[in-house]
Length: 121
Image (tube, one colour):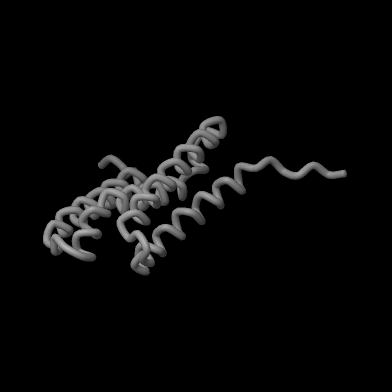
C-alpha cells in the first residue's frame, strides 16, 4: 500500500474546505454584510492559502525563500486592501480581522527567520 503524503493530503483537505466555503457563500444575502462576505470569499481563501504556505516556508530551498516572502507580501497586501475596501469606514468583522493578523504575523515570522544573523562587534 503506498504511503500517504501528509502535505498533499493537507492541501487536498484545505482545498475541499475552501470549495465548501465558497459554495456556502452563495447562500448569503446579496445586500449588506452578506454581499460583502460573498465578495470577500476569494480574498479570504487567498489569505488562508498564503498563511498556510508561510507555515511551510522552511521547506523551500533557501534561495527561493526570499522570493516566496516577496510574493506572500504582495498577496497579503492585495487581499487585505480588497477586504478593507469592502468594509470601507467600518471595522472588519472579528474573524476577518483575526485572519489578517494571522497572515501578517506569519509573514513577519518568515521575514525574521530569513534575516541574516547580526554581526558581532
